[in-house]
Structure formats: C-alpha cells, structure tokens
Amino acid sequence: MIKHIFFDMDDTAFDTHNFMLCHLMNYGIYPGTDTFITPENGKQPFIDLLAEGTFMLNANMRPYFIQTVAMLVRDGFSAGICTHRGYHEKGERYTRKSLEKHLSLFDHVHCLNSVEHPDKVAFLNATYGEGTWILVDDNPVTAVRDSFTRVGVNVVLPKNVLLFDKAWNLHIKHPHRISSFDRQHFLENLLPMLN
Image (cartoon, rainbow, N blue to C red):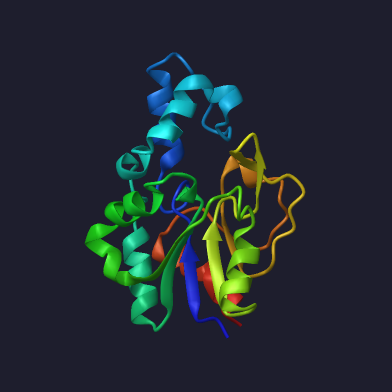
C-alpha cells in the first residue's frame, strides 16, 4: 500500500534547468533547453555554480507544486523530498530554506549524495520498503562520473516512479509520466499507480 509520495527538487519541483541556462548565457554558453547540463557543455561556470550551490535557493518553484503536495497531504499521504542535493555541504539547509514557507507539508527530507546513492529507487526501497512509496522525479537513477551526476542511460524504472518529462529522459520507456503539477493532469497519471 502506498503511504509516501516523494518529490525530487531540481528539474521536478523546481525549474533548475532554466535557471542554470540563464546563468550560463551570461558567459556565452548555451547547452540548449533540451540538453542535460554537464561539465562538458556547461564548462567552468557550471562547475562553479554547482560548487556555490545557491541555485538551490534561486531557482523557481514549478506552478502548482505546493498545491499538489497540500492536496496529497489532505488525502492522507505522507509527502517527502528525495533529492541529489546532498553532494553539497549546504544541500539540505538550502533545500529546507527553499521550502521554508511550506516545510511543514513534508514529513521527510532526504538529500542524497549521488556518489554514495546514485539510485534513489534503491535508497527508498531500503529505507521504506518496496511497494510503500511513489517517487516523482526526472532522473531517479543517475550515472556518476568524475563526481558529477549524469543521466542514467540503460534505465528500467519500477512502476512506482512517476517520471517528470524532460528531454533527457525521453529515451526511458516508462508508462507513468507527467509534464506539470496541474491538478487534473497530475491526478490522471497518479491514480492508476495507486491501484
């Protein structure tokens, strides 16, 4: 029985990619709206942005995200965060601060280091047990190279992952996807996962 619904932060709850693109354009770098940003295409300004970490405070929250979480909590679900922001020493602090007005909605905040826990699915199974949670995420199983997160290439996701559509995950064949937190759209895609 599903008890917990976890949300990723970057490029799921928050529009981090567009924030980073705007930052990189100040340096004449434009990896593209459909490209996962890496040190190769974002160069030193991207590496510096990750090291600074303040993008976690400055990226915009997606429309209807908090309303969707509040609806789920009202319906009896336990909401949580499961993010790979744990690479940064202030990752959890910045995550909590970015949600501070709404932090009481979340029962759990997991800020994982992708070097130690590249697979959020495995982490959540080990922590909460299989079949008890749903994860909403754009990149739940990462590849890590040179201590930087990459998109997982050969990924098969379990049915309890609700994939947030991004260009870098379209290669993954998965039946459960969303493209926004619009209530009707979200529920149309979540409800089949609960049965």
